[in-house]
Length: 82
Image 1 (cartoon, rainbow, N blue to C red):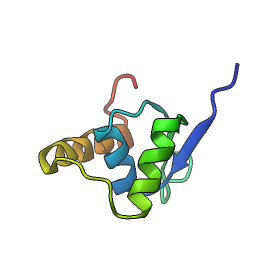
Image 2 (cartoon, rainbow, N blue to C red):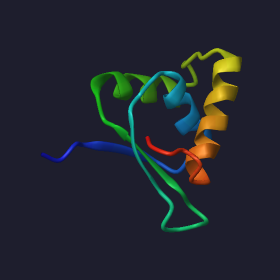
Image 3 (cartoon, rainbow, N blue to C red):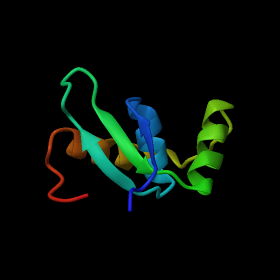
Image 4 (cartoon, helix red, strand yellow):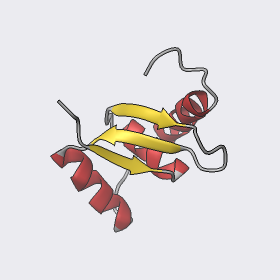
């Protein structure tokens, strides 16, 4: 069974989605200039991406900072496992 994925190469978007506890499926590093983060596409993720596009998604700044660090770990392959 194939899981539908929401993909983004936008680092702040990936961090915001991690803060909101969306499940990351894959980090594609095939192109070193454009890493793609894939998230499980759910109705909650759709709602959050809509809020993000409208600039209405609110996250705690400290949680966002921690999510940025997690994205960097995933980006540079220091994650162990997703």
